[in-house]
Amino acid sequence: MSENLIRSMPPLPDHAEPQADVVALRGELDLLAAPSLTAGLDALTARPVPDLVLDLRDVTFIDCTGLGVLCRARARALARHGRLRLVSDSPRLLRLLRATGLLGVFELYPRLSDALAPRRAASPTTG
Image 1: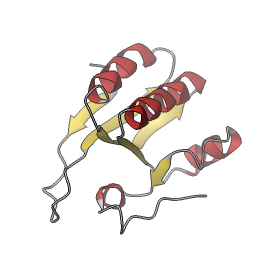
Image 2: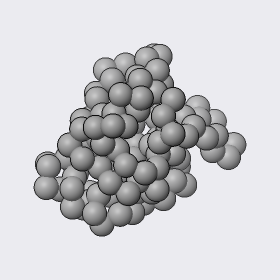
Image 3: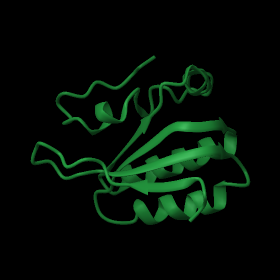
């Protein structure tokens, strides 16, 4: 997988819900990173009911290709009755999602702990 894709295991949950796959991304999500990132995310969203959290806090740049990869991963997760969440507190990412009309499309959380909280207690950022 790409140097941009780092899979990590979150702490054990204190509830009975299945644990999400957490993927920490870093650097630039652009045309150069897209092929390997797409392959990695496709593998994670290929199983039934994928539950994926993408930690974008160390991402420094996202272009339209990078946004396309995130949209593809979301679509694949939803098509398999799964879930995709993004973690970022970046005002730049919020502006980008707002400008592209994607702010309300993604589940976006400022902290990893918020994204991993039980669904009933979580409240995504709506901008």
